[in-house]
Image 1 (tube, helix red, strand yellow):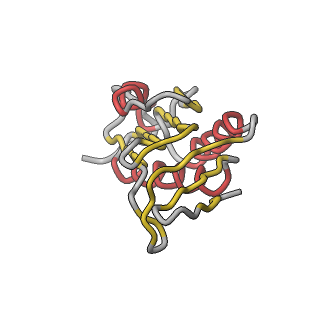
Image 2 (cartoon, rainbow, N blue to C red):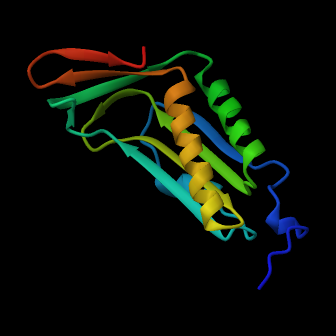
Length: 152
């Protein structure tokens, strides 16, 4: 069956950024997935970033995230760049700040698009750009008593 690019469902939504947030409380995958639900979306891609127990060959006990007061606005700017480049039906991104333990959710992003390939690409672009551009910093605490700031 041929794709009809003129159909409204094949286009990005008029206001696709549904949820952007910085949270001091636990993140919810369900909240993010619910935010990106769209009847015209044939694909939804989700990325969940968790606190791992190691980095660079060292054991990590915990870490803390902090952010600049403009972090949420920067997240929105990054999201708007993604929706300008892909036919996004809905997009959501939330990032945790504060002290987190191994296994805690640090970031959850999701993108729904008319087709799966677009959803995968847009979701990857979103998380990669958030990681590189959003003013959010990670302070890792290692088992040997040392610590390290990442992204600061």
